[in-house]
Length: 546
Ligand code: AMP
Image (cartoon, rainbow, N blue to C red):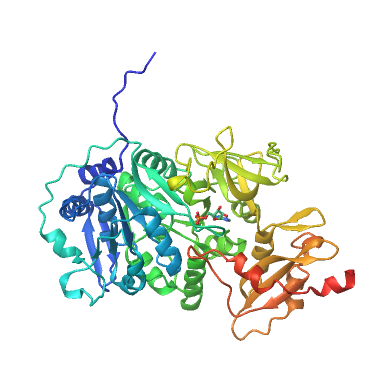
């Protein structure tokens, strides 16, 4: 028997319609690329998104076309998202930190027809424009006064386009399963692959990601997504915040500690989200200046593992609750968040930290299990670790143009490429990327755990661990460290500090000091490059074993 409920399509336009109808006055505050702080409301975003859709029609765009953006988190970027998606077209977020060849590949692979860009990225696109045959024009996201000189062809000024429209536009009549967003994965191996989100997957994900034990945003909250809109949908915030009626504070191009602090403070931000490197800069700023953040309630940390010392600093020194999160572009992107469960209130601070360093529990809609190399499910005992497999309605079922072929097993599970443990209470802990795990004498060593332990040393700024070939053990860990400026940190200091904090046989065989550790476009340590750099490195323990 069929249910008798209304057939109400889950489209992202319904989100901004809701915000306009019930939270029209709520603010979107932006540190603009031009400099000054800009204030508008959901009502303004709703109107300007419809004007943007009208402008897109005039520029020849139609349903199912792919329209790209290369932009910071700003009110303009947000209204353009809704404008593109509201036309029934697909919004392709470009990561400006990608190399020129990767950008060319992605833009051509997606067959982007038009690119919206911030003035900051004019030079980036000028550098590749000759290699983009499908791109018919560019819209520079500024006003007439700030329009830059450019060699780009068919260039439009965004504010001029918006000024020419009246906003009398009815959202396209789309099917909820139609595509509305496109984001390429970082692709550490092979070409980047396009994850094509649907209206339905984005709406379901926005609802699930904003449940109380997850992002948990309410209408009284002010949220600052430092995580870029070009990195996996800004973790759903540009969808889930308007659904909740929360105020949004957009950081624009400035993500240094002082700039983020200023916005958190002056705008009364209660919830904020970013990768660990951003929080490292903020914590440094807080420590140097001695300022506090009395209004900030929750910090979401994800994208890479949050070190224990970082969680501890936020919670102990600043009274801010840390939610450790894990996700992937393919998951829309939130998979797990680390809210404590009933019965954990009375645990000691350190016991709570033990739980918070884990990546958290699956949000509703995310199914999760760990398996061995033969695909057999491993126990959720918090000890066994294996391949992390997921499935759910907001996860990729295939990549754009079927790149990479069939990505699901026969039961619909997607192999995340991460290695993890699951404990009996449902908390998941990433031990590594499958290809980064160090295989020593048939056992696995977690590079992430070694890195997190090393950065606990007050003179270690950043740490990376890779496996180096070893004649006896196959691989042994090499610890690569950036030391604090002016410190006289030695190998013995670091190893002495780590002793007792990790299993004895996990101790790195050597420590090297470097000035810089390479990062990917989404802020992750580039292990591939490090392995290349240290491919001929001989560990001191290797000679002894031979
Ligand atoms: P991306 O699709 O660029 O967001 O990258 C997804 C990958 O980032 C995951 O498969 C993990 O390897 C890594 N990742 C994301 N969040 C975390 C986290 N909290 N701890 C450890 N790794 C993470």
